[in-house]
Image 1 (cartoon, each protein chain N blue to C red):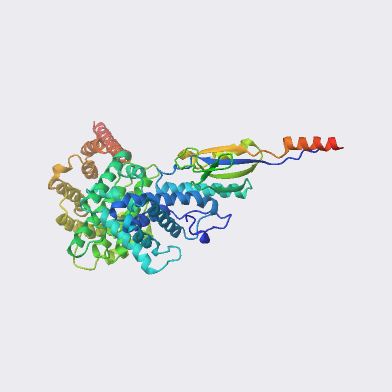
Image 2 (cartoon, each protein chain N blue to C red):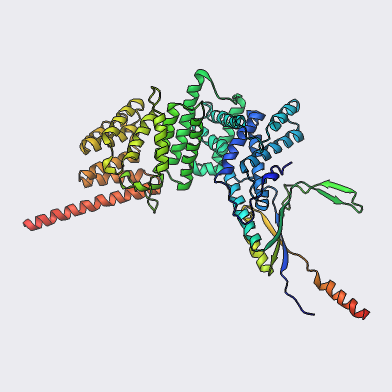
Length: 447
Length: 136
């Protein structure tokens, strides 16, 4: 039963048979969704166990017999076979047994390449996405749940990515699944009026997932980049689907793609932060930028302008500039003007102050930073002081700059951030010393 | 009688194979699969592995003088579960052990048993030689 797909397997001996990158992880998401759709949402953990076992079977047999010609279909078929065995053996589904088995047997995954079957698999993935991002689950737990169910991350991997302990993640996941089960959430894509509201929730979670990877928080760089790429994969999946093929989704996807294109250049070889100004633009991922541009143009349909549209627009300006000097700051500033109207968070206002400084001069930037509404909320935000320090440094107010950088240094919590600020602080202190020396020399000369 | 050098055979048995992979994520499972595949291919190409197969966990144990007892087992939960074997053709025990040390499952708690396959010669050849002499 388990040796399904034997007729299709066998990579020729001698060839190094590498499995497509992340295949297991991605097939996991598809198959857990498919089995959950058959067993019901209250059997989510069972679906996970069965797919885990199928992957273990791959580990057990592929090294000896080679990678199957269609590894994804193999995983699907073995998962289904294991599910059928389970249903027959455990009798947990009693009167539903025959129905479930016929559903499982309905499609022979190896031979079935019909578009309708592919659609079904996609629909299940979509349903699962709406379950993971259901509003009864707290937002943070939604991100963890999406990583576990849709992306096949283990609690340990999620912990590493979200800077939490494995135990804390496991607990969060158990609670979230319990909530889903007890609330009897439908395994379905919402329709009508509910759809746009729920879709907004899905987008927020995907955006949060992306940002978890993108923000320069601590943790291994590779893990964080994987989060970004998983967020892009899920958002692309959504955008390709009729349900998600709408301007807002394309805008979010464009935003992610533009930012992801710059990922390889955000840190130098020592892992230290590089400013936009200092990044090697020739190393920006051009294919990602053009994918971003394509989705950005698709986002222009319709009359709604979401925060994702504006942020994508800002990111597009940066990606389109061949060098820092030719950045279209006036356009960026007008986009920020629009963004503060939708999102009145002080962080957005701080970014706008930087744009103002670039258009109207540093003094105007400082004024704008001072005028941020709810600025008190930024009191413990290291970037506020980093920005103010940069402003003062540009005005050659070295003492003031050093003061701000020192404060920022106290608040920053990752190594690369601290390293960066320490460098800035050193520069301003050196500048200060030089200035004093110059002054002294000047007075000596006069004297 | 001339002594011909023949490579010795060793059997590698992969033990504790029942649930060592339970805690692994799909990504880790894929990585170990790749590593194991590369390992097996390399050894096969070098002629170091002459046979190798995975074993299913389910099975029966037959016992009793007349084989009257047929029980289920061994069980996947058992630390002794054998997940598969390699038949090695190597120059020495050291080489067999060195190969066992490369097993990608070790990092996850799998254990590798290294057993020399008993050579045909020794006792049998002595006995046959003696037998031939006594007939002479």
